[in-house]
Image (cartoon, rainbow, N blue to C red):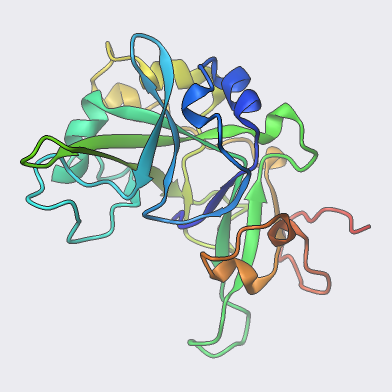
Length: 244
């Protein structure tokens, strides 16, 4: 699954990476602990790629209220074409969710069932370069109040974890191949089978995962310190960066 992620790129870096006007996120500060219900940048198709701010946690357009009876921060690719909340957005309301990494939690080996889990930071790079910025596959919808006010919300698609990340969690967010991003946004494509075929996991040798502080557990924590590796914790078949 994906319940927290990061977007530490500048508005200019986001604009350059996705070919969009940075104006909607001109005041965006680096985010080190994005949590559900917060408003974040997504890339949608508006006669070409464009940035929009949306709330994380999809609320279907047909919902009676601007809330969901069940968790919609993630959508499983195995059932996304069938679920009422997601099948419409899959055909016509797809988005890219810019990110620089995400967090996952692992039960400590031998620890009691209710013991705190160890958080890990997972990314495609760790040097501040352009490859650090990628896109989750997302869907969005727009809920309209009786008075005409609109609430735009999104969800992040998930798939079965690859061999590298399975020791952490059985699920992982879908990180779109860069060459598939334009097709994912293309309004001319609506066939679910064709769309789902685009959702390929990145090569395992591009993925970096390492343990970080439990401070990330609190949504109130949002600083660069959250990305610092925690020494002395086994990575369990995951690559870890060199500590200074």
